[in-house]
Length: 125
Image (cartoon, rainbow, N blue to C red; front, side):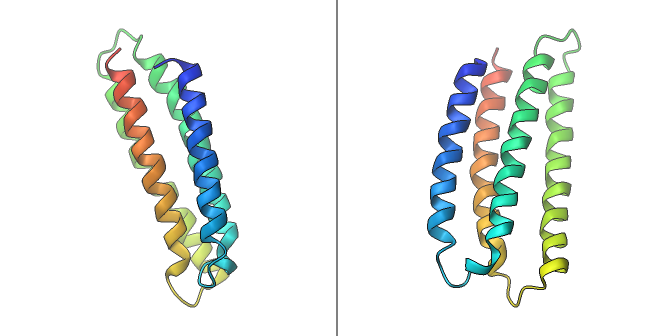
């Protein structure tokens, strides 16, 4: 996958997710938790922007295991940072219910699917 294709696809996905968040955040159960949605959106975009160059560079490495190691470490850190975001938000905002996490999980799912897609494309090169 070329960087141009990656950035184009990431931009399209990010605009679509932003539009979906705009629609979701109008719902009364989620309206008070928009900050978590936008922080999560930014976090996952930044994560993809960091992961793509790291994986692309590792495909050219002499170490055949480097690509797999980078991907596995990225999964670990993404899960830990995601849990940190949810827990920190829950502690700071003290939400009355768990609906606040729904947009986060939507964003997590979309960007994880895209991440697996572009990492798979990179692995084939």
